Length: 162
Image (cartoon, rainbow, N blue to C red; front, side, top):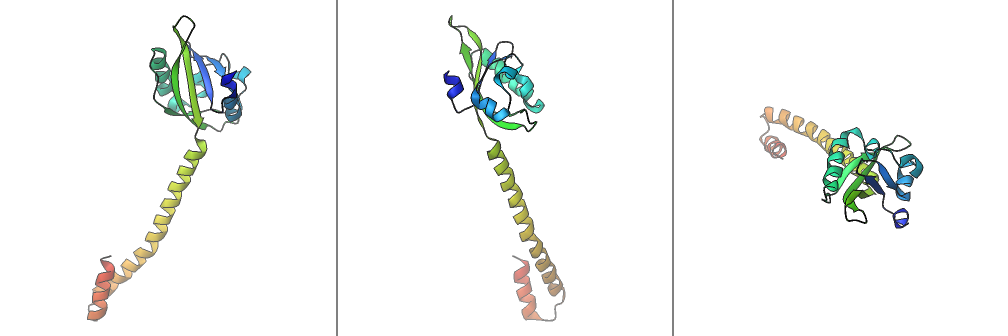
C-alpha cells in the first residue's frame, strides 16, 4: 500500500468525518495504532483550538475544493500534542463521486519549538543588552545635571544622545 510507505503523515476521512486510512507515519508520530484510529472521528485527534477550522477545511474539501495548507495540533498517545501542517484533497470513488478527504501533512513540531527558543533567546539578549545601557544613561544624566565641568558635560551629552 503506497499510503503506508510514504514518509509523510496521511489520513483518509469519510463523509462522516471518520478515519478510513491512517498511515505508518501517523502511527509513528502520534503513537496511535491504525486499529485505534479507524472508524473514530478525525476531529477527536485535533486539538480543540483547531477543531472548528479543521471541520471547515473538511467540509470545503468534501465539496470538491482542495484546501490550502493548514497548521493544527494533533493529539498523541503520550498526551504531547504535535504540530502538523496538513493539506486536504477530495477522495473520489470509482464512479467519480467524492467519498471522502485525504489529508497529507508534515510534522513541524520541532520547527515550532526551535522558533520559540529563538524568540526567547532574542528577548533575553535584548534585555541583557538594555540593562547596562540603562545604568550608563542614568549616570550620564547625573553628570549632565552637574554643569561644572564643560568637557565632561559635552562628553556626557554625546553619550546620553546615543
